[in-house]
Length: 458
Image (cartoon, rainbow, N blue to C red; front, side):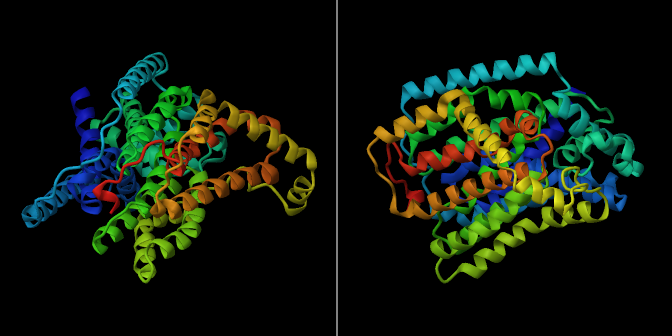
């Protein structure tokens, strides 16, 4: 059975690599495509599984997956033949400093060991994984004809209104195996965690920032949050991946119009997958669209509407699945469903809530990455400033999105939390982790420690 597990999971990653290769062509971005393969492939399989369950055609999902892999492979082979005469050179990005490379390898080895030990001792993940994500996956797998029984009032504790990206992919793989082995959610969690580190590293290295790439990856791996949340099989790591991927792809340079539009479409697809992962991702999707408007106007003057329509087209598959799930199936969210206007207004006027949230966020930022954030700020302060003029819109877009996302999270605490202190204690660390990789990306492109342009930037 283990061979079959690896086959179906690797097939989904291969599907993601093929789709990413169509959207982000060129030999200079091969590593970026590898970093994006797992999250995009698993997200696509999840959407296919939801479509199959909704139509009662779940048995066709593996056939559709295989057909997509064959079709994309055929399309890629034709593109490679037509581009063979271009003689494009591989990436000429400067190498990362060797001491930092070895330090990063050491930290990754320690993180892998920690992930393995945590998964061995708790193969079913943390309580949220057992009571929400894996429980929902078992409903989809064990009773595909009656999977909507998970919306029963007796299962309110499992948050049945949560989207189905993780449960959909896990259940899809279990269906191929005809067994709900815990190895599937473990490998799924590992795929997202590895992709997050690789994506942050490659997004910086591909911009000619090898030192920043090493520091960013080290900061992400050095903290215990990544291994804790990933081995716990929580949806917060996939959400962080899709947040970062959306921004990286939207701000990816490119000279060809077709390549630029496909990058934007894939950014929209990742933003849609964020909304299909957790309810917090739906806030991110709205803010992402709003912040992308000035970014696209600045980066593509005269070509705004084609780029913006590409963004919306990329969002469409996940957004349609989410709307159907939320409007036709899922119950209302427990935070919003029982709250009336008078209670919300009373909470908004309570100054103690603001103070508790301010203290909670300040403490959360100090703890973020076990103090790595403070070290990075000190390094950036003393580093010689060498920003790229072309990176200005990227920085503004990233920081606007981070700030508005955090303000949105704070607003939910203010308006809808019962016991604010308890809610902050149980959820704030996970919410901050959503934007932590994106903050690292924005910080290290704000004031790069070493910059040398690459052909990708021109």
